[in-house]
Amino acid sequence: MKVIADLHTHSRYAMACSSAITIKGMESTALEKGINLVSTGDFTHGSWLAEIKRDLEDPDGTGLFNLKGSNSGVKFILGVEVSTVFNNTPTTVKKVHHCILLPSIEHADAVRDALSKYGAMDSDGRPTLSMSPAEMVENVRSVTKDAVVFPAHAWTPFFGVFGAFSGFDSMEEAYQDQAQHIHALEMGLSSDSPMNWRISKLDKYTLLGNSDMHSLPKMGREANVMEIDERHLDYRTLADIINHKDAGRMVKNIEFYPEEGKYHFDGHRNCNVSVNPDTSTIEKCPVCGKRLVIGVLHRVNDFADRPPGTVPHGSVPYVHAVPLMEVIAYVMGKTAYSRVVADTYTSMVSALGPEFEILLDIPPDRIAKVAGDDIAKAIINVREEKIGITPGYNGVFGVLDLLNRKKGKMHNFVRQRGISDFTG
Image 1 (spheres, rainbow, N blue to C red):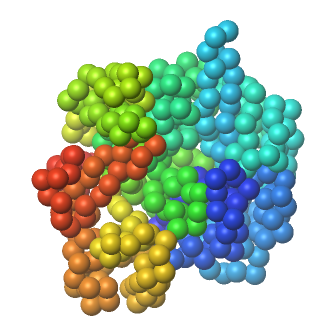
Image 2 (cartoon, one colour; image 1 turned 90 degrees about the vertical axis):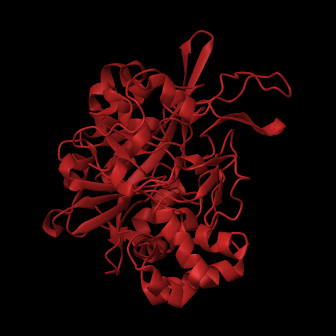
């Protein structure tokens, strides 16, 4: 069976997250999206863990959970993002985010207890821990060797394991003697598979795309597609896929256009300065003279030992996608949270099926009959990579032009290319 998984989410107990997030709401959203495996997020937070215990069950002992009394087919996996903060040198502080997945409630309780020695568990769904990445992995694995740990949004400037301001130059430098237990990395919204393929030392890691969801509509803005026999849909199988032991079952990454991510280019938000590192060597803001925030593309270029367009042997195919609400909002000239956009989204899902089917598979004539020619054309342009993008920088999301209404006015246009160019 095809499994579409979003392995990094948050609850309403995490900082800057929607108060509307509930377990039931996550199940409903997953059904709308076409996602059948989703992380609970935030299991170290006491109040959220209590809701997980109240609302979810694992009747078959698979390590995957479903909403009690529900046969929707949506499964949950226990997950959390944690932040490690420590002095790398007497004068240098490193802040790195990581994702943890676990197979049971008992393990979640034990990991919560183990990590509580290093930070407050209930102040934020993403706890801040005074420890190094290696210490964190060692503590988690002391509870269970079945834990899966991977860097969250690996290239983000301030909290990514390879970020320009808080990161390292290798997994071994970051995780030290525990690097042997890291087998995957989350690419983050500002990088994609082709960017990571340029770095040969990443070939041994499973590349993951997850939403880092802070509100329900953001679920699945990136996701992972796996092929798993229904009889073997369990935590162990999933862990083997993520840990690169059964990588052949990972069949596709659904990804943001990296230019839309809010740290793709270098820049300085306060001065409205955006810099393409491929064409400029500017390191200081030309307006205020302060150091630019070095973006993901710049950092990937620093690591890269292969030219753009390289497709490593055995790499997992990918497809770029734009969330359906964003497509509708663009066409209508509304915000993604307006009522008319929500109503149109609901009518499209009701008539055509889950969001991912609409975005990736359903023929344009069927979409046009339900939602009109412009929405259908915008979706096809996204599929064919024929859209304009002003890339994001320093916390500012990129701006999409799905119907090329501003051709010649955008700062950068995605090279028109077929998806097959980078699959293999």
